[in-house]
Image 1 (cartoon, rainbow, N blue to C red):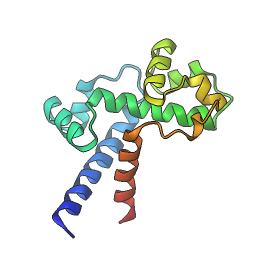
Image 2 (cartoon, rainbow, N blue to C red):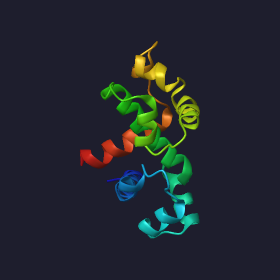
Image 3 (cartoon, helix red, strand yellow):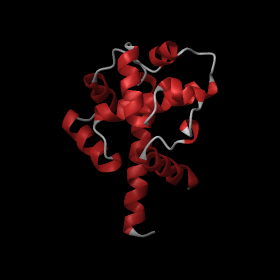
Image 4 (cartoon, rainbow, N blue to C red):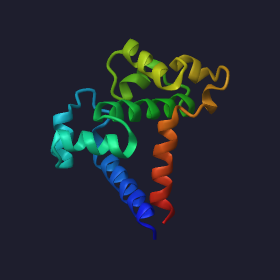
Length: 142
């Protein structure tokens, strides 16, 4: 295995380990970064640097991204849920803020995404999904 592949595997492993440690808490509306760093056992600075270097996001961006990604999944696979219910389920207690952040990441509103206007359900939410998906595939393919 080349040193570059070894580094990629390490980064993928770290990202997955981090995600799975954080996952039970990610959808808590009252989640604070201080709680995450206690769970992870890293300093705020180290966690921020590690996330920036592995997936190009800050801790807050990572949390928001995972929440929006989960919301997109719910909007497509649980059409009976109202948008306000989806927002609450993924950790947003303000629907307007949820809609604003959803649109920033996906390029469409939650309602447009849910209704499948244009190519919204087929959208790759952004290049960060590709990067996270590749990390996950790398981790589970070996």
